[in-house]
Image 1 (cartoon, helix red, strand yellow):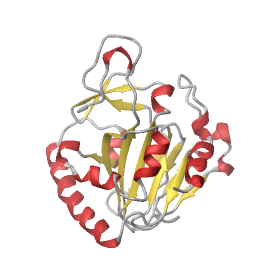
Image 2 (tube, one colour):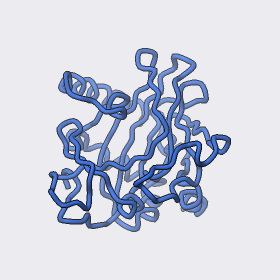
Image 3 (cartoon, rainbow, N blue to C red):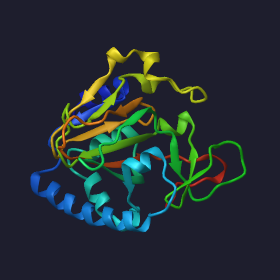
Length: 242
C-alpha cells in the first residue's frame, strides 16, 4: 500500500486513487445505478429535500449489495482498513448526478450528519432530522474522525463540469459549534479535484468542500459511499441498518 495516500489523508484530508475500477466495471455500475436512481426518484416525489438530497439520490444499502464488492477492490480495501483502523462499515450511499438538466451548485460545507437507527432524547447527539425516511443526527468530531467518504467517479470530473473543490487541511479544525467558512482558510488555498472514470477520491467528513455550477453540459456522476471504522456511538445509538 502506498504510504503517500495515508499521509495525504492525514495532512490534507483527502487523497486520489487512480484507476481503481476498469471501464467494464464502471459501465456496469452506471447502468445499475441509473435503474436504482430512477426508482428512488419516483418513490421520493413530494418529500422535503435538503441541499445535498436535491443534488443527490440516496440509495438504500439493502438494494445495493454491490457496494461491498466495490469497497473490496484490491487497490482500495487495504487503504480503507489502514485509514479507518480495521473493519469497514458502510453507513450511507449517495449518487450525485450533475448534468445539463441539473446544473446544481453546493455551497462550502462539511459533512456532519449521520444516519441512525432512531432518534433518542439524550443531548449527546443533536440536530435531529429525517432524510428520505431515515433518522439523522449531527455527529461529534470524534465520530467523524473515524469516518471516510469513498467517491467513485463514473464520469470524468473536469475543471469545467462543476468538480468537487476542497480546502486542504480544513479537516483538522474539529470545533463544530461554529463551522469554519472557506474565507477562514483563504480561497487561494482551494484544490480542484479532477478525476477520470474509475478513479476514487477519499475524503474525511470534516474537510471543507463545495461544488460550483458547471460551465459545460458534460455529465458528472459520482457514487459517494460513507464508511466508518470500528466504533461505538454514544447513548446506545446505532448506524442505520447496522
